[in-house]
Image (cartoon, rainbow, N blue to C red):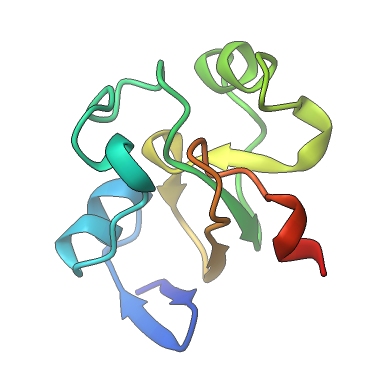
Length: 109
């Protein structure tokens, strides 16, 4: 059973579970601000569930590649869409504070 670390929390889920759904089921919203209420509900088109993931995950799929190439995202920032990730291994998940899940300047300080 894979372990997901999020802040000081440890969550366990079935192998192959969708990361966004697991986070929501455990009371963790992968969306910031108003995107909590207005998002694509996991279809991979809005980009608001972007998170940084440390751990072994598959390469970007077509939906992620298309969405994460559009500002404010950049393919080079290492974010992934939680709605497109199947949890196969232990992961550490980091959610930045920007509306799109991106790192904002004051977080870097």
